[in-house]
Image (cartoon, rainbow, N blue to C red; front, side, top):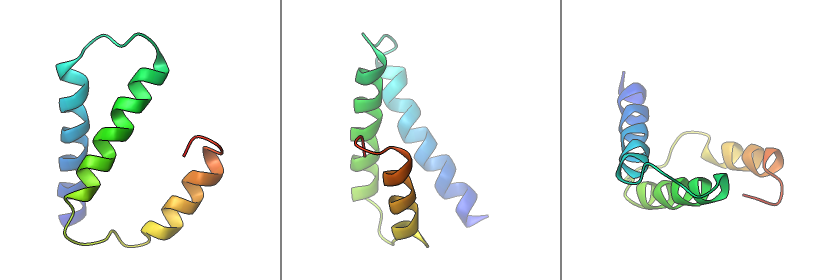
Length: 67
């Protein structure tokens, strides 16, 4: 239950970014906005997510050169 609330809160913060600006000139602009929102949201987290190091390494493999 605690994990679900955390995910919903994170998704709400991302939706807030896309709701304020509904039109993006291209996909790259949207990705940059969401990335900056993710960095801002993660800086406010008090505790570290379980397995975050593994998640980051998998994302860096999947999004090679972009993450």
